[in-house]
Image (cartoon, rainbow, N blue to C red; front, top):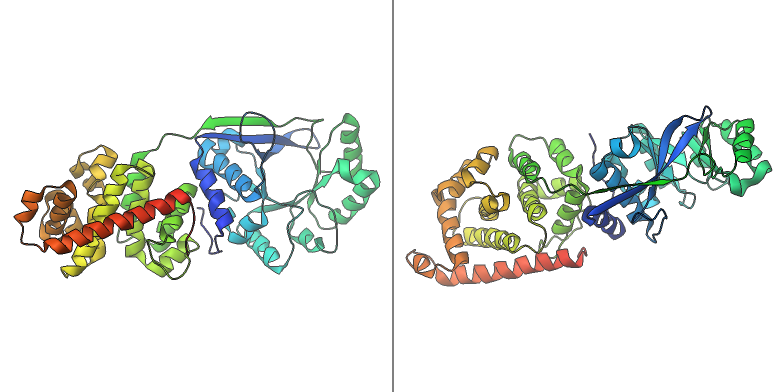
Length: 428
C-alpha cells in the first residue's frame, strides 16, 4: 500500500503533480545498471518529454513527478523495468513532502541529488524512507563535510568516473566501502573504464560502454469510468476506515492533485492551507471530504471545462444553500444529491444501475432514484430550476427570490472554482 505523507505540499510540487497528471503521451528514458558479471540488475529512469533521447527540463520537481507518474501510474513498472528496481532522481522537495511514499518501496530506489541541501530535516526524511523499506542512492557523490552524514543512510553510492579521475575514485571507494554501501560507477564510457572500475572493486556499473539509454513510450490509458465509480463507492461507504479512504485517493497522483487544488481554492473558503490527503481528512472530516471526492471523480470522468461538470457543481451548491435556508437536516447530503444528479449522464448508464453500486445514505439514494423525502423534494426543485422549467417551478410552494439568489450564487461559486482550476493556482 502507498500513502501520501503528512508533509506540506508546495506550489512547486503541486505544479509537478499537474504535469504528471495532464500529459496524454508518456515517455520514460531508461539505462540499465549492471553487476560485476554484466547482468542487468536495475535501471536508472530518466526524464524524457518525447521520442528524442535527451533530457530537457528546467524544473526538477516536474521531472521527478513525470518520471514517477509515467513509470508507476501510466506505463507500469513491469513494462518499464520488467520488475527490476528503478533508480530515480528525487528532488529535496519530494523527499521533504513525502510524496515518495506513494510508490512501492520494493521497486523504487531513491536517488538523492548531489546538489540537495543536507540538513537534519532531510536526514530525518531519508531515515523515514529507509524505515518504510526504500533504498537510498547518493547520485554523483563527491565526499565533503557537508554531505558526509548521508553515507550512513546510503544503500548505494554513485561515483562519476569521468569527473573523479583515477586517484579520486580510489579515495572515494575507500571512504564509501567503510559505510557498507554498494558502489556504482556511472558514466562508464569506454572498455578501459570498465576494467579500471572492476579492478577498483566497484559493485555496479552504468554508462555508454555497457548500454545507452533508450526511451520507453506509450499513451495514457483511456479513462476507466467504472474504476472512478468504484472510488465513489469507497468514498460513500460509511464504514470505511480513514486510512483506507486515504489510500484509495492517494494512489492516484492526478486525483490527489485535483482534490488538493479544489480544497485550497478560494471557492472553498478555508482559512488554512490543506497540504495532504491526511490533512484534509483531519481538518474537514469524513463526510465533507467524501463529498469532495465525488466532485473530483466527476471532474476526472468528464474533464475540466465540461458543461456537465458545471451543471453538477451548480446543482450541488444550490442544493446545499437552499437546504440551509429550508432547515433541512444535513445540507452536505443535499450537496451530494445535487452533485450526483448528473451521474447517469457522466457514466452513460441508467441511474438505478449506478446507485446499486454506490452505498449512499438512504435519504440521498431515495432522492436520486425517485425524488422522495425532503432531499428529493429539494433536488426536484433544483433540477427544474436548472432546466428552466418555470411552469413546474411555479406550481411549487417555494420562495422564488430565495431560489433565484441561490442559483445565481451557485453559478458564481462554480465559475470561481472552474476559473481556479484553469489557472492552476492555489489561493490561500
